[in-house]
Image (cartoon, rainbow, N blue to C red; front, side, top):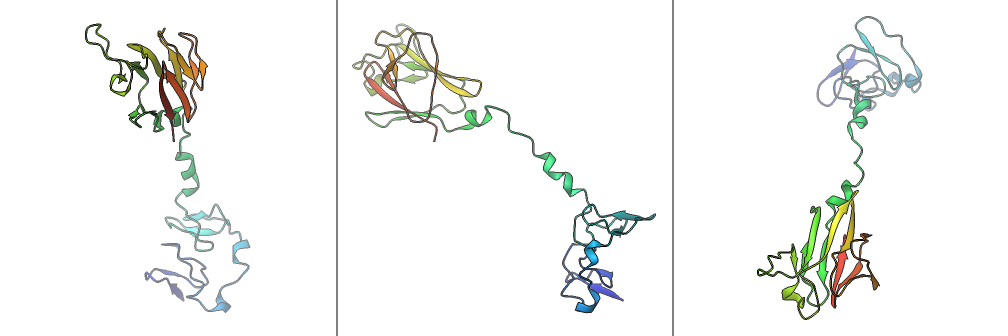
Length: 201
């Protein structure tokens, strides 16, 4: 006598799960034919059978699911190993890092960039910083042509003053030229008198 699952697969009488699709067969069989002790039975696999890694029951070779407990017989247990660990620093490079000018809320997206220069564009001096603060009060605010830079180091954003005339300040602390300092979300950066906000969220 056999039991059929809802998809029509035939299974031996007494099977708790379909050995083709893994569907529970408890409702398809009479209570008397399903033994509550079935999961504890460990069958010794013989030729043409495969042993369930979960309950140890023997199943015909080639079946996808254990007819006793419904466990996948396709080596699913090794699937989690396929998830590779995230390399250190990759999260920081993928972050939506940006600079916001406090005076007019102008945003500059710097995510994915390894090195960003900040200052004032000056064609005469052939100075073309990545972020030009001239339209945002840069000249009046004392921003140098090449004032500061933000760069990635070991997956973390760093701020460095580029020997500016009116200095670079991080959270109101003056920076020494060419001495990088670590940036954090919501840090306040002041170039001369121009205020910027560093955001990573």
